[in-house]
Length: 372
Image 1 (tube, helix red, strand yellow):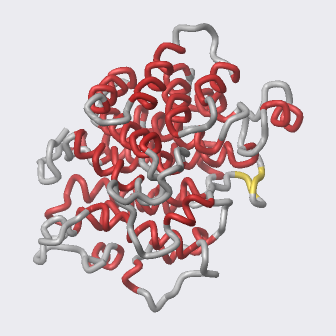
Image 2: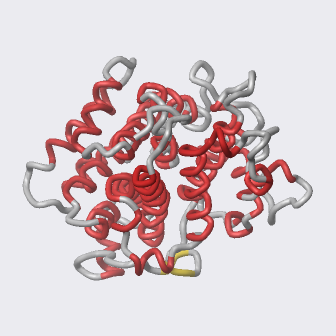
């Protein structure tokens, strides 16, 4: 696989990468959608509603089966911001965190407005998708972090006391920057997490999750990907809670049959570190994508983040074809996700040709304006 965004990609490599990009985005959304009906329920309530085995299939939430939440919405805006950053990378003012912040502000506008403002062409096509204007219980921390134009940074983060998993749950797309060096992937995810979740646990969990996805997208196994994340975390101050959570996830694989008790033990109080551990564990022990996602969401902790994080790992690991077709058929916004995934894959494999003044596609530039 290419090591820079300008590398030459073979046809097989391009197809494999596109499958992993699609798998990652769709996997996040499937885990999110599966969890949506049970996110605020404890295990007893889940079993009361869905039977002794818990939730086994997509169920209605927000008026339909397959509905996604703010976790998927923000993941899609992460992709939009990354594509724009790549388009602008030859600019003298190139600063990817700023492009991501602008993307997250576009998402925040969907939570305030009734629908897209067609006058704002610079918002691009994603912000004109009306289905994304549905407000799906976004965490207050997200709305506060994006409540004004000021961008949180590592030096002056937004919500420095918030260790929750929402920033990590939107960070899978950073791992799809396969032409970037792993330490740069970590850095970008950490900086972008600080825009809404400035606690070190939240930031470093986002960085760890992104670099695990990065290794998977390059063809590594999950155990090896976690080991790479641990090595990169070790040099960062305050890494111990996240590193220990990852080690506990690896150790739990050898501790008997998987079940809700094990998942809840890993989740702990629901911090980003605990939910990252849940995702790694469920992706490792899951017999297939369905089993891994069911294991992640049938527990008393934050099921939504657990499902989304697990889905991203499984999708990056196995690609689009491993995802349950019946679930995909009911997934809200699937066509939008596929277009966005394919645009991202094309940008990563053919970027210089796409935005060459002599060869670029007007349709492409209309979707991802250079100037914003």
